[in-house]
Image 1 (cartoon, rainbow, N blue to C red):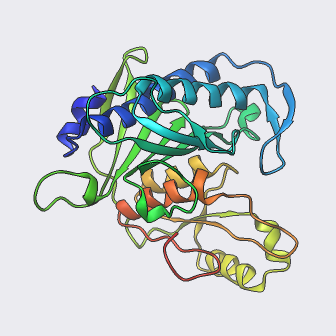
Image 2 (image 1 turned 180 degrees about the vertical axis):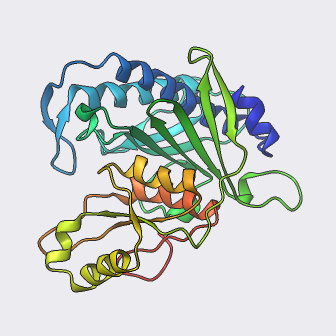
Length: 289
């Protein structure tokens, strides 16, 4: 079970285990929703980025909120589809233990789903109550789900979240098996290596008026990097994890602003990359996201 896997990775605190397990439950539910998705219909609303919302986006959002409310270990949650702090505190206090806050994107890649491309969900877990003003470095874990031929979770645990002496940061993968009833370890540890010449350049329109980004992309091409780009952040970064390296970029320009958000996508993905031995950087500052 996912609980047993987490314990084997040095996670002992019961509420923290329940928090991550609930994201596994949400992932299994979303996998069913996606398998039965046939109607590309819009809800008539937009999310905070100005994107038209599919009924599918809202269904996946509701699946996550349902799972975390049932877990009873979260206090606050906000998502790309519900961009406000929502009180999800348990109605009755459970046994003594900390509560957590969750920032998430329930369905990353809804614009490419009609081509039956892989899509995903992104989750960042912060300690305590509240998400406003938090940094990615405060996260106690992040989780990314990938829905493709397999349904998988990749989980990042910084050393501070693992009990025991000498514990280091770790990123590992589990796969949903046995008719979506069981999680099994499929990659005991994901390690990113520096010499992998694979690139996924997002928001390429920005190269038209961002000279530095244009020069960087041309460097990757001239240095014979292999292009692996689907248009979805989850599958493109996940490819790096599967191949033990690569580079993903999403850079803005004056005329082409990037749409990635720190709370719902970048912080969680950044923790996964850094716990796997990779490096992240902000486009305006030479420091970790």
